[in-house]
Amino acid sequence: MRRARLACVLLTATALAACTNTAEPPRPSATTGTRAPAGPSAAGIGDPYYPDDGNGGYDVTAYEVKIGYDPPSKHLEGDTTVTATATDELARFNLDLTGLTVSAVDIDGKQARFSREGEHELVINPDTPIAKGATFRTRVRYAGEPQLNKDGTLGPNGWQIAKSGGAFAAGEPHSASTWYPVNDHPLDKATFRLSAQVPDDWSVISNGHEEAPRSANGLTTYTWVEPNRVATYLTTIGIDKWTFERSTLADGTPVVSAYAPGAEDKKPIEAHLPEVLAFLSDKFGPYPQSAAGGIFVNESISFSLETQTRPTYAKWANLDVIVHEQAHQWFGDSVSLERWSDICLNECFASYAQWLWAEAKNGTDLDARYRAVVDKSKDAFWNRKLVDMGPGNEFTAVYDKGQLALHALRRQIGDDKFATLLKQWISTHRDGNATWPEFEAMAAQVAGQDLTRFLDAWFHQASKPADEFLYPGSLRK
Image 1 (cartoon, rainbow, N blue to C red):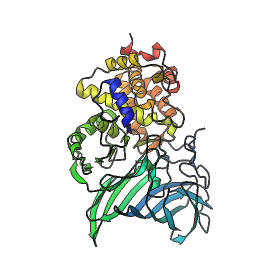
Image 2: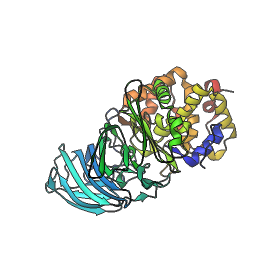
Image 3: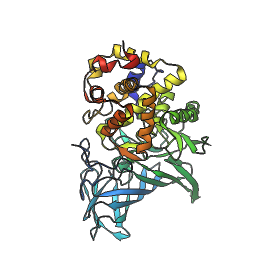
Image 4: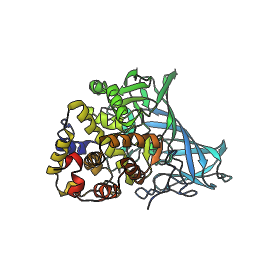
């Protein structure tokens, strides 16, 4: 994610292009993302920052989302099937769904009792408890007018109405539960299939591969399939009168980019996408997604977002933002965090990718940039933690202090080992979840040195690092 307001601060501090907008949870396997349950029927997956997010007792393997949406009335009809494996015996379990009216719930074809609790809990009671280890399919039928979630730390998020009268879904850490029932936490990644029916003069963009649209009786159904597992906040839908551009990368990966009315002027920067992905592949390893592209809305929302395979870009997005969001296809999308306190695993690396791009493409002296930022930064800049920063503070220091921290780490261990570390992190945890302690352990192993004090000073402390950590290697005065 790239914040609009913070982006302006960053661009001033780093002399980039002008901006136009102002208690640890249960641990999954490092390689597969399979997690221990938060507990049968727990209304929360165990993240201390967002204790009501997600749900315990099961592991989702696939979402099959079917909706019909009428833009003039803003009415949505939904029919979603969630395939999951019970990690405990389930006499009841929850899904997250905000604001929509549920008419029926079936489990493996049999009607189930359900109720609503709190702001987003759909509580389901099967007639017979689901056995531990059993795979089960929960079908939920629902309808209503999806509502914007106004409590996001990055600004309003979730289902949003476009200037054109269309709609799109984007937000972090929440978004998906505003339009389909979901286990809404990145710890439970699953495959995603969307079929969306809209009037013929509208079209739909989403994640992954597209299937041929089907039209009948004045309505067209668009189907998008993401075969790679995806964190729920990275799923998306865009309903508008899109202009589509289609192509392929050199390796045959399909590319689909969509431009809302009024956003067609973003085509020149999206034309750099093959170059950007080739550059990032060289730095991080092979492109890890099933498809590529971008979704360009004509809205001045407060963020752009790394929706998987196809980032969603605000009206103010520039090439620097393209680099940032595409870097997330590795850091955040392929390798996802286990808990939100480790958001540096996503944002620090995507932000540093912008520096790597500037170094390679513009000849920027990163040591000079680093020193310039250090020299002008006041206490308020340093007094922010990069890891376990506290709920509500996730999307702050990771965008600017995070760049400095990773550049200092690069100088501490050397270019070759830093390059090895980036690729090894992605290849080891591809299509899974990982934690900051795992990154620290890998960094020390690759570096062949004890990095405890260095990493503590930069990532765990809300203060300016001592000079021995602030000026390692070629940064040393």
